Length: 61
Image (cartoon, rainbow, N blue to C red):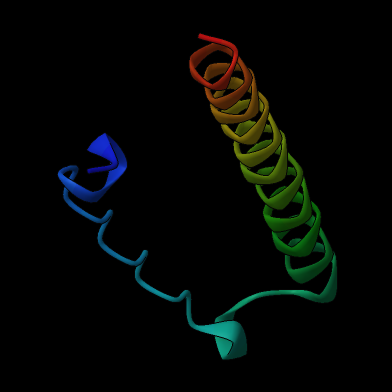
C-alpha cells in the first residue's frame, strides 16, 4: 500500500473574487499559481525517483 494514500487530501483553496482584483493582482496570482505547480511537479518527480530506486533495490535481491 502506498503511504501517500493514507494522507488526507488537502482542501482546495478558496477561489479569490476576480472581479475585485486588478489586472496586476491577477497576473501576480497567476504567477504564484505557476510557481506552486512547478513545486508540486518537483515533488512528484522526487517521489517517482524514490519509488523507482526502491523498486530497483528490491528487484535486485
